[in-house]
Image (cartoon, rainbow, N blue to C red; front, side, top):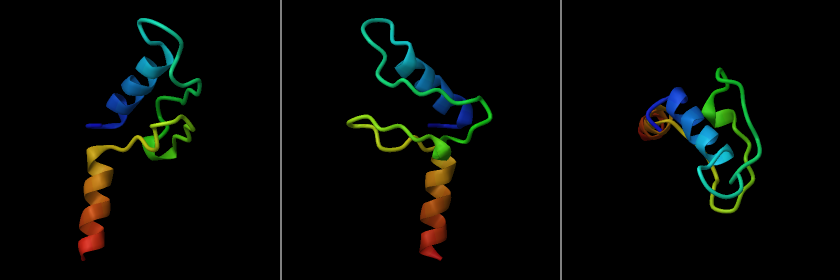
Length: 62
């Protein structure tokens, strides 16, 4: 995701899809950092922002 807002938009879309059953049932407050999401669904391991992935990679390189 680009940022926290985008991560929450994805989570909302998974909770309220236009057709069919919700893909996830958990919801989180808008201030919750995506790395704190704890969703146990097949095929969904983490929701991360680009910045958090970049920072993790850059810090691992140093």
